[in-house]
Structure formats: C-alpha cells, structure tokens
Length: 236
Image (tube, rainbow, N blue to C red; front, side, top):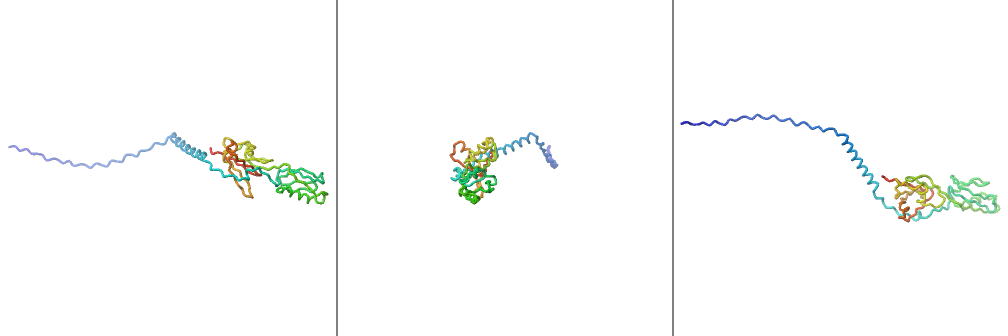
C-alpha cells in the first residue's frame, strides 16, 4: 500500500523594509508683481474707507449760543480805526476830525499826542479839557464818534483769507462773504469756529454757518474786534 506524504509549509523569512526618505520640501514660487500690486490696492482701499468713514461721521451737536453774541456789537470805548470829531464851541479854530491810529493815539493842535484807545468819549473830553485848561475861555469840548472800525480775521477754506476792517456791526455770514465766500470744494461750513478774547481768555464758538446761509437756522452771530474765524476743510 502506497502512503502519500505531505510536505510541510516552508516559512520565508521577511526582510525588514528600509525607512522611506521624507518627501522633498515644496518650494513656493516667488510672488509675481501682479499679486503684490493687488495687495497694495487692497491696502489703499482699506485706508480710503477709513478716511471716508471719518469724513462722514456725525458732527456733534452745537452748544446753545449766549444772547450777547446774537446782538450787534457796539463799543462805548474808542479803538484803532475809529474816526472822531472834536469840537470846541468856544474856539472853532481848534476843531478837528481824526482817525485813531494803530498806536491808539490822535494828535491835537498845540498840545500834541493824546492816547484815546480804550477810553470812552466822555473820558477823552475830560482829558482834552485838562490839556487846554489855560487856552480856553469856554471850558467845553465835545467828542463825537463819526465812524468806528475794527479788524476781524478769516482763515481756512475761504477764497480770500485775511484781515477785514469792519466799520459797522457785522455777522459771521457777512464776514465770510467779504472773504470771498466758502471754498466749496473743501469747506466744512457746518463746523466753523470763531475764537475771541473774553477778559484776556480765549473762547471758541462752533457754528453751523451753512444752516444760517440756507435759511435752516435763524441764528445770527455778530463779530467783535479781533475775532478770528476758521473754516475747517473736509477730510475728503
């Protein structure tokens, strides 16, 4: 009897696989000029948006104006530019009409210079009487203000900034018109600032002059000597 033999299974030893090397690092190609330009455009667009937002932000509400700035200015004291007539009823030859100089003085016949700026006509009359005390038979003199002039200054976004000599009560709208009006391309006419000295201390008022001009506001702001008007420019 024939007996078959089964061959035992052969075991093939496994050879350990060597570690694979890491893949090479991918290098990024240099950024093209077009991409760089696009980034610059985006940056500029963002900055422009911020500027437009700042220019369009709401203007804070205006503070109420005190009554004294809404009345025409009239001074009881003489100042530079005023024209005064000095009359001597008992000595007509001494009569004179003069303008107060920049140094605040006038010149009188026979007695010379007299400082009159900052004084009332009555005070000047008393000083003139004292100066002519020994020359007058009739102890009387009359000082009359024929015209009064004072400077105001307009700066910023107007067509003709500078000094304006005012001979009568004047409002801020009239002063800006004297300066040629607003520069419509850049003037921020709803936030005009007027600065004046009050008892030696600067005080500022912010005004919506555009509303005054267009009739949306009935407020009238009258100027005083040496007021400085500043018309700001828009941010865009």
